[in-house]
Every structure is written in structure tokens, then in C-alpha cells.
Length: 212
Image (cartoon, rainbow, N blue to C red; front, side):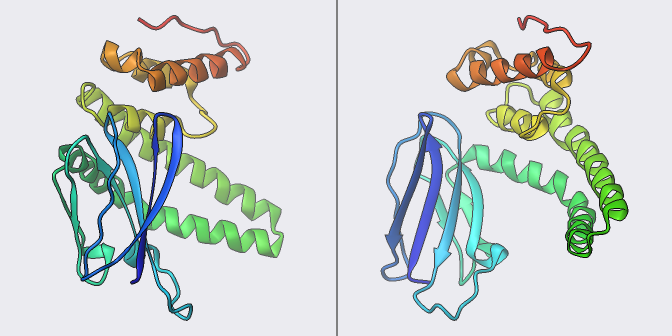
């Protein structure tokens, strides 16, 4: 490994940076004002080495503090210290882990059916994937918010539950209303509320509910 890349969002801006490794060590310096998701990726000068997600990439949560990531030859054995919110993130990862084998199997099937242009089997596989996602969202992310509404990671859990297409905006609003007032009134919180209400208003037969 010759270089490590870092990516995250700070103050609504995407940040991408890199640093060279010197003496088996590397360092990034930046500023965040709240718990923030960070992605690290190892890079090789040898183009013959194929990237591996489990070996060369890691997602963690940092907070306004000095955070250390220690690993030997691979991010797969990395340990993170200095970030309490990352401990909560690891709990979420552990809760979601039982769903990973079935998710991977369905994604493989979907790709195969796409290549074979088998529309009937593709549609069925996508329905099963949507059902599995709904089970995961309820069992992992919704449950986490209900059990830990004041957690620094509750907003991230809400984002995961809602997803890019927000198939259940009314349920998202109910979970949103469980969050602390400060979190709801933050820039990200108000943006999330706007998206939720917009999705409710564009859903047939649905009516927006004012949040409290």
C-alpha cells in the first residue's frame, strides 16, 4: 500500500483527500462538528494488484476528537479507537450482518437474470430483494432508533431506513419525530424533514403531518 484516500461530507460539502504512507503510518487532519461517516481506501502503485473491498476499504464514524485506525496488511482487521460513535456503528453492522448472505445471493441472481434477459425471474428476485431490505430496515435501523433515539447515530439509522427512494415516508416521519429536537432542527434534520414531507405529499392518498 502506497497511499490512503479518505472521503466524507463536512458542512454539506464532499471532501476527498489522500496521503502517502511513510514508515507504515499515515495521517489525515480535518475538522468535523458532528459524528461523520468516513470511508478510507488503500491504493497500490502496483497496478497488477486488484482492489478488494474487505481488504482495502473501511467505513467508520468519527467525531470531533483524535481518532486512530490500526491495521496490519488489511483494513479487514482494523481497530478504531477514539470514537465512541463508531462503537455504535459497529453495533449496527453486527445487527445487519445476518442479512448479508441472503442479500449477496439475491444480488447475484438479479445480475444473472439481467444478463440472461429473463424478465420474469428478474422481477421475482427484485421483489424478494425489496422484501428483504424492508425486513432489515425494520429489524435493524427502525429498532435502533426506537431503542436509542438520542444516539449520535440515530440520524444515520434514519437515513439508512429511508433509503434513496424513501418507499415508506410516513414511517420515516414517525421515526424522525422520535429524534431529539436539536437533531431535528439541525441543517441535515430540516433537509430530511423536507424530503419526507415531499414524498408523503407525492404519494397517492397520503397527507403530510407536521412534525413536533
